[in-house]
Length: 402
Image (cartoon, rainbow, N blue to C red; front, top):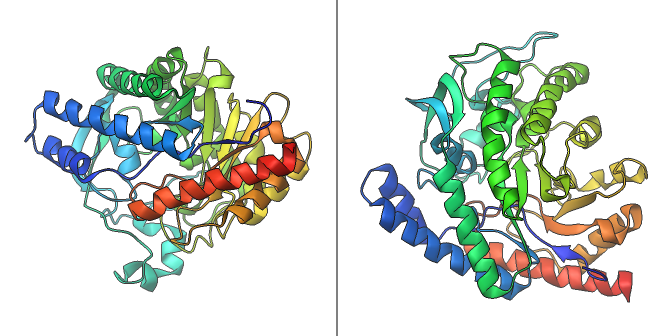
């Protein structure tokens, strides 16, 4: 679209009470599949209309079709994959409640438990204080393990999601849509009791998820690979590894993403990179400069990243390297944050957009959010941030295009 800065977001939008109740009921086998799908369909219609009414250009289904436990937590974004990958065996282990500590050694990078993250270790009192605001409300969520060959079993679910989104887009005259999907590296973070080999597991997960990505892009939608593992996994390695060791670990995830995207048009692929969604200090995050070039190896046409977080807003400087992005690709910087209740002023958003536009060209900038807004801030605040995003993009468009 000429002479306009387009707007979008990262994916997760506030769930309605009805949808949260339906997810909980489904987990307890207390709702029929027909009724559950009916509630999803009604909810998707409403959330697409709301995005359209606000003025979001690239809309999605709010990730409403991503089945969760019904929990309002920071982990629910990936739980949907438990229902779409075969070869998993459910355990009663809560990913937050596991306490074992895994130590990495030089040349042998391994992820430790979530509770053993270095940021949590450094700010232990704050993380353990329920009134500190560091973590939001959450329910315990049991995790599966890889117990057999990985397959894809989510065909019916992804086809439903694609159909509901495209139907709503047509109904409200929306031209561009996207759908989030977990990256191979993020999905492969579950415990492996079958392959016992990092690359073998990643390859198997990549082959399975290729089916989901293809179903989305075959419908003309953009598939967004949610790949927080590319950045925030650094904090889950204890003790801190060398940058070189982490980059070697990262390369396997980059290669797996490209394997999963084989044969898919890069213009229909958006990569989302972030340092995790929790409301924490984030003082142990890896600098963007150390990973950006590896992330850019992934065959995606656009790259979404945090750009308004207090820990990462300064990293717009990585794009001062004029050759870094490459031709025919776009950046999708986060211009409003999911980690603060303050609603960013449209003028601030416009300033941020113009700065990026001056570096990579206005035609290569799409205004977005740092991460998903659902479950992280209050519904009213989430929608207010998106309204401000649209207003800021309009101001920037006037400055850039006249």
